[in-house]
Length: 466
Ligand SMILES: C[S@@+](CC[C@H](N)C(=O)[O-])C[C@H]1O[C@@H](n2cnc3c(N)ncnc32)[C@H](O)[C@@H]1O
Image 1 (cartoon, rainbow, N blue to C red):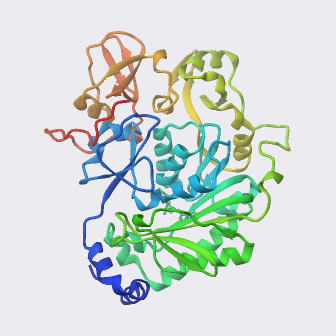
Image 2 (image 1 turned 135 degrees about the vertical axis):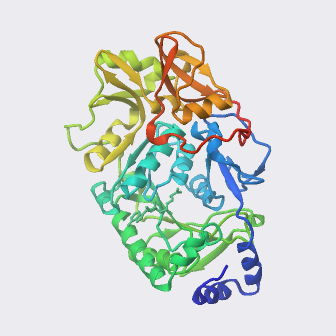
Image 3 (image 1 turned 60 degrees about the vertical axis):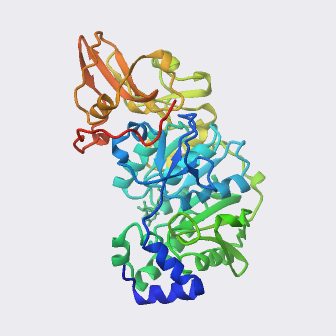
């Protein structure tokens, strides 16, 4: 792999005598890692753990993930290991037992959003945002598959968040960057790299940070990250923010054997990931605390009386209530034909988000009203809070599961007129409607597997027991 001269010169300056090791690591195959959804599976895989992430594991090789139904069920997410370091910032700096408001500003495809969803409490709110609409749909899909039920997926420009002053306790800005850390995984990133682009990225990152800063509560935490190594987009930007806003740099504690490199510029600390030191791609992260006292801001106090969210009708609520475990913890909402559920304590905060942002997906989408009947929705099938006992459930083998996920007609030899929840290894995949001895496949068209199935189907990536 040939790198631009100025990139090489900078990396030589940054790494000194370790530069040949770095170069050598860039020629190796990138490690493959996943993060397991512990709310969906009790499995502890016999795999090497990612040291800084409780549910992170390395795989010995890259399987054909598409052919593993468990990934479609949201039982795990394929995520680059270095970026799982965000977990350390959350665990070390935030009381995760308390209800908090968290923003993942640059969210698609959803690695950090699904990770955050696993770390925060059920009564905390996650706003997973992605400005680019087509990418926001992918984010919504991954958030729905993860199934936490306390996330809102929005598609807004960072500047729109100024409409929510002092709203978030934690903000993750995983900024669009020049992508040097992805050179090994994505040769196109090398082609697109230039000093000019580094400069443009750094300026755009400053703009993004300024645009969202007001939405962070006094005393709130900013987790800033990029997948690049140049200082302009990393330490220099964070030092600039500290100077502009008087934000305090937060120091993280970790085992030196992890290989994470700590840097400091003007008293501001950053954490660097290099492929010759960690099993992961290039990554940078810094943690800052906004000045002020968090106690000054009271959550959930709405200044307005008129809500945008509409509670579901009594009749509809009664019909869907037992579809969730612990329904008493939810408020049931209806917009148009869709009935959804949100943790009850999040109603005010979610309404505030609805008043000010474009919301694509919210909470648990439970059902669509079809005349006098209700059609269960995909969000319910994949929810961590689904009450399976409320439905007729059918187990699929690997071949049937993949055909179902391809949206093919499958025949299980059943007879009836009910909705069927289809599952693989105990993991719900979606719905089918029985019509006598036929069955209609209700898997979402946009999510379907498009590849042809091989004749020899591989085993799943992991043996999941739900
Ligand atoms: C590094 S990626 C995010 C990866 C994601 N956090 C994850 O863990 O899966 C950066 C994201 O920022 C989005 N983006 C691009 N321009 C942006 C802008 N001006 N403001 C905010 N986000 C932007 C990109 O579309 C992209 O999805």
